[in-house]
Length: 131
Ligand SMILES: [Zn+2]
Image (tube, protein in one colour):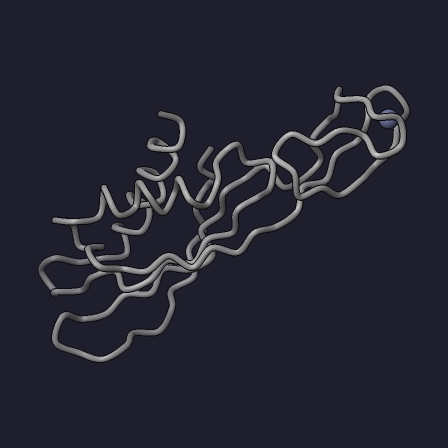
């Protein structure tokens, strides 16, 4: 359910850039996905395909950029980068890690297009991280 909710939030934010009266729809969404976000790309894509039909984001593409997480070990203090969803400390093997970065899902840009027009320029948006 967590991933469904996260995807719904991404979609809601993307649809704010669309305008039904103007005929402006979402063509592509660019996401930055942290390794420690607790959601994985295949799930987001799965729910995207489930949620977008019938909306102004129907048929849109998702461009997902994965970013590594940064953690600090609470046992030995080692700071490390990881691409694992459930990392362990590379120095001592401890699993009690504080997340310093890479636990968010950030919308970098929403590209919209008028229904009977060519490509619109990507619109940068400032959206709160969807968790
Ligand atoms: Zn450690």
